[in-house]
Image (cartoon, rainbow, N blue to C red; front, side, top):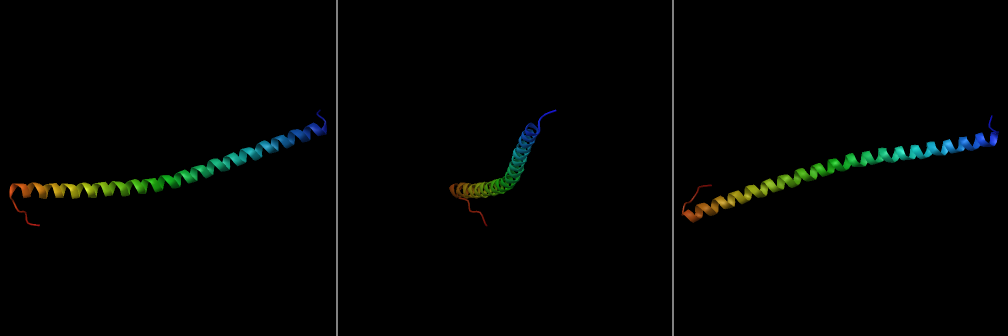
Length: 78
């Protein structure tokens, strides 16, 4: 059997390993939470940017249409 000093040293090493593993797991969980939060923020940002592009595209189409009708000498009623 091992002397008590060796057993105590092994116990301390295992304890330190468990502490490091628990700290790593906390970091992983915290990283997942932050990642999930940022995904929601990015998704909302991309939706807003997409809606802005759509509205700008519609405005350009309306302007292009009005310029074409003006060139033809036509007048469109609003």
